[in-house]
Image 1 (cartoon, rainbow, N blue to C red):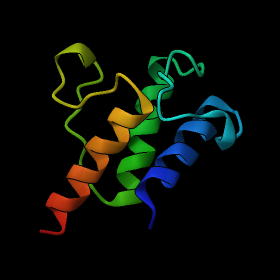
Image 2: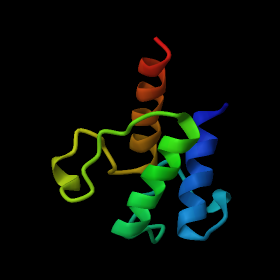
Image 3: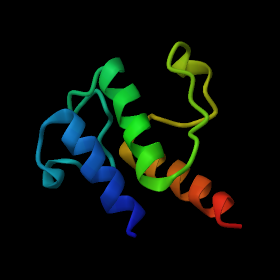
Image 4: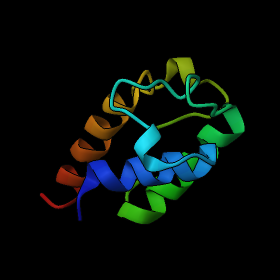
Length: 86
């Protein structure tokens, strides 16, 4: 499974836009994902990859999981998937 494309697909679905409109440099804010959409995206990502994302929806700024851009999210998911299968 291509992690990058699957994460982009999930994020695009939450933003109700085409995956082609999501770039690695995009921020969630730029593509229209609010806090609820972020939480739903995290749940969808956890389900898709069978992982647990260390993310506190109540205090996202205190999370160790970087949500600053799509690229940062992809890197975080790749790391979690690698740890899961190590």
